[in-house]
Length: 211
Image (cartoon, rainbow, N blue to C red; front, side, top):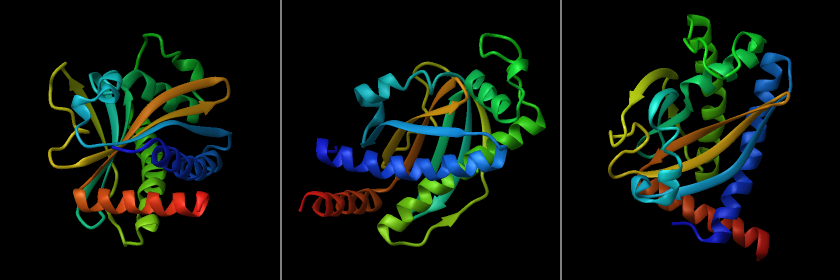
């Protein structure tokens, strides 16, 4: 859906946005949390694309998802999704408990404290992303309180990040804490009007960059 230039502009915009979220998380946990944004896409039919197929590891089996519902001209949903074991590892690293779980088997159950931590991670990251989109689109956004969902998704089952009639902004991100890298994915569902406005703003960014 995006041209190469549009994709580059959106990636650069999200790199700056994600960097802001990383700074907030670093202050919260008193250690350096670096967030990378290697890939950004805006897709209409996620299930029918190679990108969607490549994200199957995030959307099958046991997953943990921090969910933020919002209104940006229409109702939307933003999700931060990890395979459950990777989500547990990230929480342990941020809580200073990395020795309790190495990401290779073991106990990946979430305590109440773990769930609250995942909720706060999603709250920071998703609020920054959705807020930046609202600023870019010059519109006010209404937020819900964040939630955490634990799901088991079978192959071929309807994915929570895929909603009929919505466009999906896909951000494949990597959390870097110390020497550990944990890959996750962010999905922001936008209605047609919001997606169209976003494309228009991306084109404006390109004009500013290249004239």
